Image (cartoon, one colour):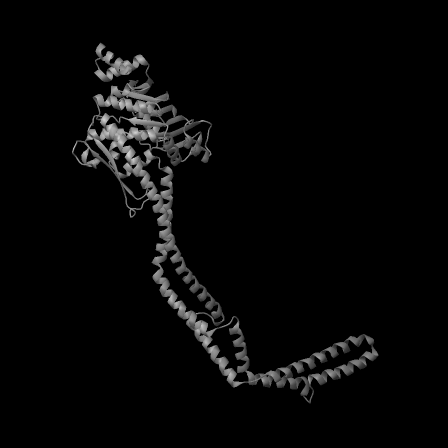
Length: 553
């Protein structure tokens, strides 16, 4: 619950430090005194936007801090633990706003982004404004009220998660489907290209082998002539072959060796050279024996090389890269086949995810229908007490599986019949302003009892209500205050008198400056304030007696 609120230089408040208690706190004051200023200041601690009038004139900045007890707020405790911001059993929210509207937010002394302040604030305080019943006319707000009453958080999370998964898979499927025509055309081209290359059946490294073989056979005659010429030089030249010259050199070196043994190595080297020459000659002879100039084989080789060159030009790749290009086309074709498989799998996943989503959505819809009936009875009873004795309230829940959304497949409509014999119709078409206020207030009080928020603020929600109805409203809020901390800004004595405690807002001028203050009233002061609300400026003994009786009741 909210334990303390400190306000510095906010609007027309110079300084306020307020301590709060459990139960229902009534807040009253003269018109224009600034009864809603404390609520507006608290709203800043909850992450609301700051406007130009936030900082008090003449001040450099405004500062608001709120201290909460977390003894009965497990969701807020868990949030603080998850964000590493816990501080024992208390929590302090603080907001500073400079005159240039730049602001900073803090949780337990730690600077945080504004979105975190909002996220935590929703777990600590719920604010119901005087125009909240107008929001009730919108179907999305009606759905929120019903889900809050039924505490559908886990069901909504399951539905929302299913919706997001369904949409994600559908997006993937749509993207794949949009390129399907392109893939079909590409696949047809690839199938033709791959079939042609498969038929040619080029092996890895075959181009290099064909090119080398073709070059050899194309120059076969020149090769034979050159080999024979080489043999002639090495061993057949009568005027002096290389072999005969080396033999002569060996003979002469042997003579020299006899004169000087140091020349023995020369003989050895020349013998080695002779062996190399003889082996070279033998190798050339063997090559000539194997060299066959087969015209038919050469023609086949030339045809394959020509086809290879033709295909490389057709596919716009180098001949040496044709084999690798063939493998790439095969891989792309296989990937397109896998895309078709993925398309089928995604279609199956879309159907499965949709069925899973609908299962959760139906479960949520069934729960909504069950709680709607429960809420129908309570709101009907409430509006009977609020001077609509013949009124009936009903929540129509319609499930439509084509109406897929993160909140399920339901359309919600609050319906009411204000007079006997009238059919149930949408609340926006039937209820007058006063009736709408009473119905809205009844719903707010009933749903507030089911919401886990520990502190609720009702800011002049009793507008348009008076007399006996106001007394009923006061009793409703006091009853709510038995289990929840309630703040009620009101101008009705019947409502204010039901508070467990009472705070008075006063505006006064000092040294040419206007200030607002808020003080807690004791029993005698409460009687005087209720008398003022009852009788206006002139307070008589009768109004004091009425006020005392009202407070005692």
